[in-house]
Structures are given as C-alpha cells and as structure tokens.
Length: 237
Image 1 (cartoon, rainbow, N blue to C red):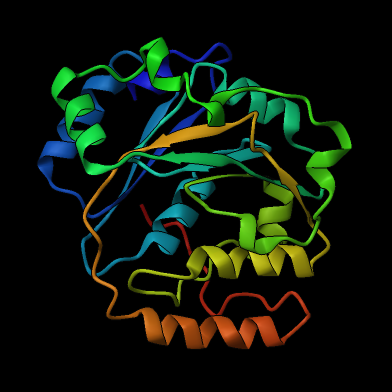
Image 2 (cartoon, rainbow, N blue to C red):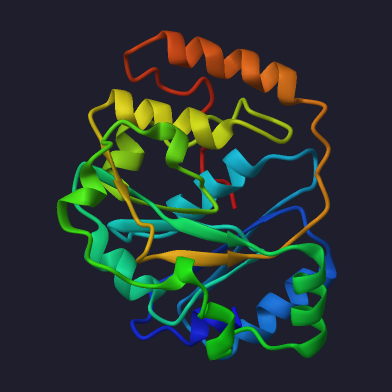
C-alpha cells in the first residue's frame, strides 16, 4: 500500500482481493483504510487457492470503468497509475512489465522497509518511452500478458465473464482470461517501458492442480469463440 499511496495520479479505488488471509493482514489493511477512503478489503474464506473468484469479487465491488490488476507482492513506481491511464483504450488490454527481484534483493528491501525509494526504480525496465505504434505490434500476443500487472476496461472484462472460477489451485486462470479476451476481439498493448512493477521474490506455491488447470486451458484455446466461464460469482459479501 505504501507504493500505491505515493502515486502521481491516485487511483479512484484500491480493492485488496484477499484469498483467505488471517487476522494479521486484515489489521494492516484496516490501518491503511483509516488513511484512504478509496481502500476496500474484499475477503473470502481460505478453502483453496481461489485467485479467480476473489478477483471477480473485487471487480464487482467497484464501478470503475478501468481495472488494473497487480499482485500483492508487487511495488509500484510513482507514475504507475498515471501511465496505465495513458495506455488503456476500449477493446485493448495493457500487458505491463515486471522486474523480478531475487531472494536477496527482496530480503534487503524488506529489512530496510523502503518501498518507494528512487533507487528502487532506477533499472532499465523502469525507463519510460512513448514507443508509439510499437506498443501495438502484437495484438494477439496473449503469452506476453501476466496478471501480476495487467489492465483492462470493465466492459471488456465483463463481456467475457471475468475470471473463470472453476480454476482452483495455482495456475492458468490468468492465461484463460486473456485468451478469451483476445478471442472476443480485445487487442494486446505492451505496457513495457511505461508501466512496470517491482515483483518481490516469494516461495513457489503448491502446483498440484496445474495439470488439471492446463487441461482446462487447452479446451479454451481449442475454441476460438469467447467461451464464457463455467462459474460466475454472485456477490454475497
């Protein structure tokens, strides 16, 4: 939240999509909510890894036209929201960049408690260039999209039914969404050298569900239609 709070252009809302975290995380979010009226906490019970469902819940809790998804272990440079707003267009998704920190870099950063120092974003990936038409050279490049840094218009997100909540366990729910967006005519715009995040290192999550999720994704990729998700969220919070 510290890096979000220091944006040159403040977001209209910040939704913390919390997949079953404990009281410690909730207390931290509550402290930040005292400072920022635009912050909301969307929580669901820890039944399994259900990132798709909790992201859908968060999206349904805001009326914003422009949705930006970032992982909770990502730090945002001060111009991140400003650049995302410059890059987004209707029927276009923004595939932002990321700098992957290693374990030593992450440990040093967390020990120092510095989330937004200028030196943190001094690397080449954080340089900003207009790039012009080069950003739109690969309009169907779904492989270049990672939902740790990804933006889309709400209308386009809703038109394909959001994330498919039948993906339970780590993996491929993000690719599934992007493939369906591309099939629906949404083009991919590169956000690299414009909207990059600093992605902290973390342990590898349980990937026991990956094979089943891969199988589900292959079915979607074999179908060139939109293919609405098999499960849709009803707001019950």
